[in-house]
Amino acid sequence: MNKTFSKTRILVECALMVALATILGFIPVYELPRGGSVTLVSMAPILLVSHRHGVKWGVLTAFVHSLIQLMLGIKNLAWCQTFGAVVGCILLDYVLAFTLLGLACLVARPKKPLALGVGVSTVIMCFGRYLCSFLSGYIVWKDYETAFEWMEGFGWGAAIANMGENALCWLYSAVYNATYMIPETILTVIAMVVLAGVAPRLFNRQK
Image 1 (cartoon, rainbow, N blue to C red):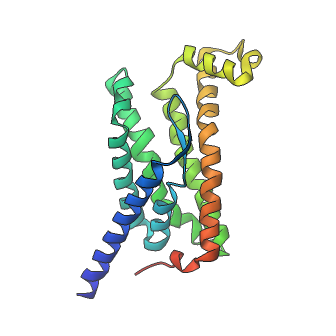
Image 2: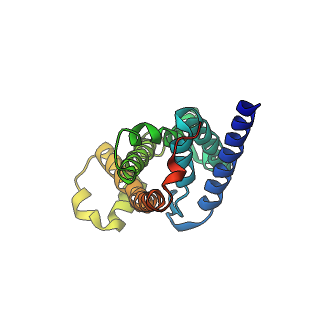
């Protein structure tokens, strides 16, 4: 009975965290015209689940969250030119990018004090999401003309004038995705570290 109640409580808590993350995702600080946005720390609830309940529940919760993000962004698949691009978009922009967040506890637990572990794990998980977006930007969304136009408007016209197509598209993906993931990471790290400082009990592993 106690075991069943414990699992039920965890399921309810995870569902609430997914709902909270989804709501926070609807509150963008700013949005980029070609995808990507800085949200009001929408990754924080998923990271917290990982810290409280471990890898199994963290990854499961993060995976469910990734599917919800996919459903919310399903219209983006219409821009994919091939079936491979559709698969790449689903995996890199949604499933892998958000499911990685469930691994936060693996990085945080060996580090003391708590705020340090939480801060470092948040940075690494956000970097993992950035890498997924970076790869997707080239593999799925590669477009030389778009890359050149955006980078030129970004003020890098002289630097990219003699770059080859592949090099420019890689650079564009790296810079474009960094413009929203860096501030998103900073905001999330601040939120998680502050939360660890004022309410450390929230990060206690629940059994």
